Structures are given as structure tokens and as C-alpha cells.
Length: 268
Image (cartoon, rainbow, N blue to C red; front, side, top):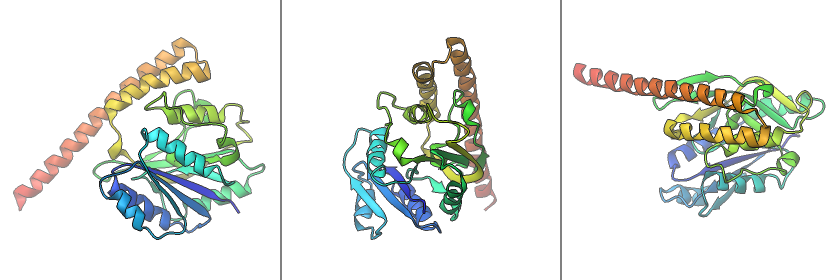
């Protein structure tokens, strides 16, 4: 029976943490650990966690050096047991109550057991709108993340060979996935599911930081993939333009929501 370690990193996001917890609690498949790493929150999250009475929750509340330091702490706890690890941070949720059940069934049906499993996801905007997003073939890893990390499951024995590199402040997850999949047989060890596995909360994402992350991606591709410079900088330009388009759309979405709210007030 497949065992999962669900790692949740939190810092000053009590509402998001509660949403993630409710999503975890609703899972019909119960063979999992919920590993929570809280970076000494001062918004009430640490107190809420201290009162949480759940035998599947393993909680650490202490200062850390940021997101990826917290994720490494969670990773190191997760790999102490066999199975698969999922990084589902505060504010992120499973797509439905049967996600773990479906992933476990897919893993147990595969021969041999995969080292890396991933699938589709939903993006949730600040207005609550859900946007479908689809996993990309692992062969296109050089282009970018094949999915959101909340829709990825890492086999623990192989996961023990990598860490999130703290010299990359914004793209350490992309770097970890490249290192994790290097050397894997992409036909045998990688399982891509055509199922929606998670809801990724966009409200914590800054597109200004995204521009800096794009620059980090260039360095990561050069260092860990050996991508030729001309390909690397073409990708940099394409991602930069795409980020600007997303920023413009987000601004328009925010403006439309504000106009809609103002119109409702006028009609009251």
C-alpha cells in the first residue's frame, strides 16, 4: 500500500494553512503523513497548529531561512519513511477528495513503480477563478517546469539524493526537479497522469519576482542541463514576454473585478 508524505510549508498564512488542512482531511485515501514546517509565524498560525489534534500531523514551528530552507526541512523528514513525497504548501489544495486515491492506484498499477509522478492542475486567481493548466511532457523540461510542484510526487529513496539549493532564491524547485530527473529512464521511471491533481493558489505569486526567477532559470539550465547559450536566451526572451502578458491580464482582471464591484454599489 503506497504511503505518502505531504509536506506543507507555512509562514504567516493562517487562512491558507487552514484551507490546505481541510483539503488534506477530506482525502479518502488515508495512508499519509502531514508534515508541517512553520517558520515561526506570528499571525496565529503557530498557536493554531499547537492546538491541532490530528495524529497524522507532524508539526515543526521554528525560525528558518526562507521557503526553500523550510522545504528542505520537510524533505528531510519525509524521506525517513518509504513511499512518495508531495509538496503542498499553505494555500494550495488537492483538486478533489480522491486525488491521493487516484495517484496511489496509478502507482500500484505501474510496472515497474515510477520514481516521479505528475499531472495537471488548476490555477486559482485572487478573484477565485480557476484556470486549467496541463502537464507538459518531461522531454520539454528544458523549457520550464513540467507542472506545478503541488502536482508532483517524488519517490523517497531517489528524493534522498537531492535538496533544494538555497543559492537559487526563486527557482530552486525547478533546479531540484532537473537534478531529480537527471539519469532517470523517462519511459520507465516517469509517470504522467492526465488528471487534475491540485489547485495552485496564485495570490502569493508576484510577477515582479517572476522576472527575477526567469533570470535564475537561465543560470540553472546552463549549469545543470548544459543548454546551448542561443537556446537558453531565446527561452529567456519568450518567458519574459509571457510574464509581461500574464501581468497585463492580471491587472485587467483586477480592474474588471473592481469595476464590477463599483457597479453593484451604484445599483444598490
